[in-house]
Amino acid sequence: MFKKLLFLIVVLASALYLWCSHHCIDAESHFERGMTEYNNKDFFQAAQWFRKAAEQEHATAQYQLGILYEKGTGVIQDVVEAVLWYRKAAEAGNVEAQNALGLKYKTGQGVIRDVNQAVLWFQKAADQGYVEAQANLGEIYFSSKGIAKDLKQAEKWNRQAAESGNAHAQYNLGLMYQNGISVEQEIKQAIQWYQKAAELRYAPAQTRLGLLYQKGQGINQDFKQAIQWYQKAAKQGQAEAQFHLGFMYENGQGLNEDIAQATKWFQQSAEQGYAKAQNRLGDMYFSGTGVQQNVTQAAQWYHKAAEQSDAQAQFQLGIMYQDGQGVNTDLKQAIKWYRKAADQNLADAQFKLGLMYYDGQGIVQDWKETATWYSKAAQVGHAKAQNNLGQLYYDGDGVPQDFAKAAQWYRKAAEQSNIEAQSNLAVMYREGEGVSQDLTQATYWFKKAAEQGDGYAEEALKELGE
Image (tube, rainbow, N blue to C red):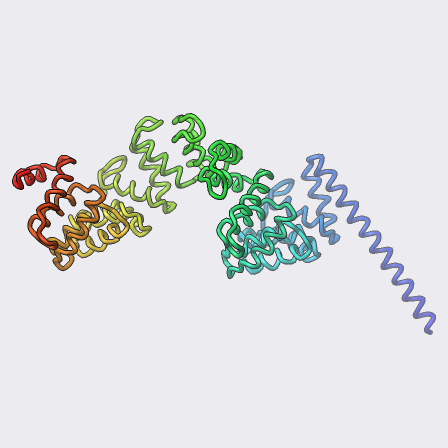
């Protein structure tokens, strides 16, 4: 009985072995046929053969079939179907599929976005030494979008991938060294990692190197080197590099000033949605610099940049709505854009918003709000706001009347050559309001104002016998 049972087991094992061998050979041959068709660019046939192998649990074929569905190559594009095949391959241990599945969870393509699932799949591939997954894991811990920031993990995985030659990880490691994130700040180390990534044609690293050379940070300032790196990145379509290259042409840094070239690069950058370039292009159309003046075009470019929260563009758009340049006059829109810029601490916008509240333009007059916005701008050195805040304290509008504070703010503005403040401060010295009466100081500040053409100051000097 035992011998019969043993014989039966041997027969079944042999049959199973032969069945598996046959199917494994079939799966491999189907996969190889698929690769042949793929390399011959017959993608429809490639998909058929990959499917045959994939249905026989061939993990690499499952991954390749996922790629075809993701790209719509040889099959109708279907990201959900792509994810299905990536998952089968990933569960079988295929590192490329694990990384691909992680990316889908990170971006929410074909699945509900789930950063924790992304980390799980990146981790599986990273633990097997797959460099791209290590870089993705480093990036996700570094950016902390949808997951708790873990800079130690970010450094660990970025370093592993960087040392294996991954350009994106090299760039991220450079950022960490430049900004002292999880490592001691060390610009020279940052430059070394940027250099490695830049030499691998990684455009963001080329741009970063260009910036360091342009500004002379951690390295001798060298406009020509900056231009070379900007050009490399700009030719790859990197919008930030295109903007900086335009800036260097506009200002003649390291090359001859060339407004036409500056406009060309600003345009290319702006068309890719880079807000700073859109704002600069708005300036050029507004002033007619390098292009035919066109305030309508200016408003359109300002609007694009403003929608991306560019504070300067928001401020300029506010001016255009207030003055009716390139758009219909609309004070509510002006206030809306001034407020957006003011909330980003742009002093010019804070001052403008203060003026709108003071005059009741497009909004209920409110001198307390005026004082609030003037104060914000004044505290960061905005001379007109300092003078106007002084005037509020002098008159007691929106704030308790306080001559001493009025004099303090007039002085700050006067020292920045604000003509009204110089004359106002002189009056206070002449009258002894908020300061001890001092005709010498009054004469001094009236002269400063008169030198800038202030008629009242000129008459006041005559009365003082000057």
